[in-house]
Length: 291
Image (cartoon, rainbow, N blue to C red; front, side, top):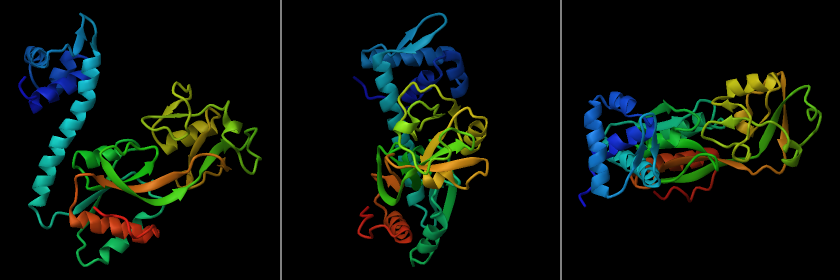
């Protein structure tokens, strides 16, 4: 069979994400018949059915789900290759570090200061991402490095080094039945309502948990104050403390790690220098960052 074309793959991924040919065609700025014909051509070339179509619904077949998963990675790789090629030709291009504000355990200033003392240091641009998309910034070339939390963030396709290890705390309203405890266990929280972080499982709660879906700490704090949920977070993400809430260590919760991550295919010395500076600033083992 012929090799997949990037354009065909982009068309399919867009349809698979929208599950609607009209919306996908609008997003791609092409005519719907052109898009339908391209998808049929792709299915014919692969010899499999990718989509189940009816007059009202579009759903993915097992083959379609597989192509969506691998196709996203392939498109990210193509985008990253183009971006890194352009940046490689610019000797003065700044490094780009993606973070979520407040999600860097207080280390960002120290890391930047340690890097600035290096003779090969370049400008570092800070890129702000969300709670769940920062790893994608590195995979598709929008950023060179990311500060992420393991085991919560998806580190596939990335190398990483640990900058800090920390425990977790339960965040409760002051009138909660457990609020006077000096410490808690995960068993103590077994029947509590826990939030569903969009794209991230901070608590280890089972799939299908029926707590409210939240996307940021501000929303979480408001819902805890209203008694709608509690939360379990890495200690650094629970700061600053809110006066209406209590923060209690969960002694048997798995530890979390703040890590600095970069693409497995990125072996540039300037990236290695930044990783070493980050390890130096965090007092992590200095033998790492062999990129």
